[in-house]
Length: 269
Ligand SMILES: Nc1nc2c(ncn2[C@@H]2O[C@H](COP(=O)(O)OP(=O)(O)OP(=O)(O)O)[C@@H](O)[C@H]2O)c(=O)[nH]1
Ligand SMILES: [Mg+2]
Image 1 (cartoon, rainbow, N blue to C red):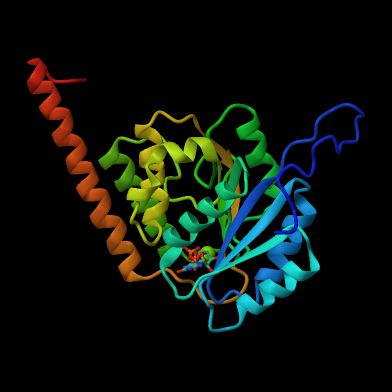
Image 2 (cartoon, rainbow, N blue to C red):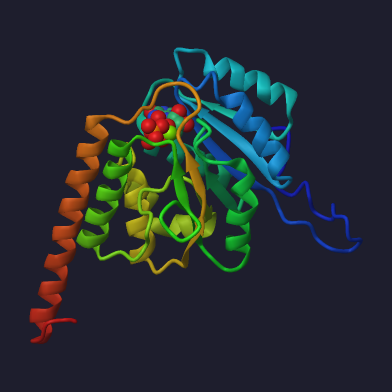
């Protein structure tokens, strides 16, 4: 790796003032050849303190080669090549381990397809600086929105959110959001070695673990825009995985509450 996370130490406009330390922005890619360069350039331009890690699962369209070329041209860009497509969850877990090994203390998850605006990176990082353990780029809080999604896609996202919030009793508004910043020390409290969610369920899984572990979670409004090129990796299997896991986590959660209530001889509010 050509950069170290402390490269900004003492590097500031204000003499004597410590500059914020670098954050790593993990960008998973599978067949994002037409998107990755614009995403990387926008992130480099929009966030001085951000390094990027492209996590490519041997994309058949050559995204990995393009990522290597970007890394060769920009010292703040790194690439993690994986041998096969193993889903978003596995790609992010590999990125978290990569970041922890290199001493980063902040990690951001960001899609490569243009849906997540790199200009929002500083606001997510500001929320961590203000005390959050997890800052969620949220489409469904005041000021947040979704652009150009077909009605059925929006309905699926809203429906999944309503079901998940009801089953798990969550107050987070955008539980499936994929644009997030974590403090790595907080993330490591979540027993990541036991996470096996593959698709978008990974985001729900980590939100649920964050709530159960009492992390400080803050939602930052973002505008999410439909991908600008390439094909979605959303599939029926990904939806079924989320539905199944949320249902069993919700039932287990209710069973635990009932057991506790009967154990104490009263029903919890
Ligand atoms: N490394 C890796 N990246 C993946 C995998 N599946 C999806 N991605 C990336 O994860 C990000 C989100 O995937 P999308 O296909 O955009 O999924 P989505 O945003 O839920 O679906 P749309 O809203 O329809 O675009 C993109 O940058 C993908 O390239 C995977 O198995 N491995
Ligand atoms: Mg997308």
